[in-house]
Amino acid sequence: MRTALTPVATWFRDVGTALGHVWRRSLQLRVIVSTLTLSLIVITILGVVLTSQITDRLLDAKINAAVEEMDRAR
Image (cartoon, rainbow, N blue to C red; front, side, top):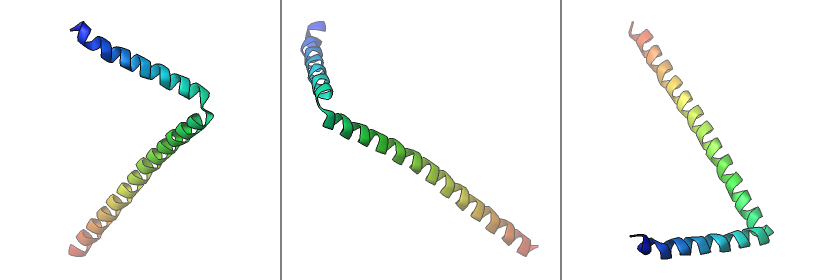
C-alpha cells in the first residue's frame, strides 16, 4: 500500500517545491494572489453583512405588517 502512494507523494513534493520557487521569485504572482485573497475576504464580509441587514429589515417589515393587520382586525 505504501509503495502505491510514493509516486503521488513525490509528485506533490515536487510541485510544492516548484510553486515555492515561483512564489519567492515572482513579485507579480504575490501581488495578484494577495489582491485576489483580500478581495475575496472583503466581498465575503460585505455579503454576510448585507445579507444580515436585508434579512433583518424584511423581518421587521413583515412583523410590522402583521401587527398593523391585527390592529385593524380588532
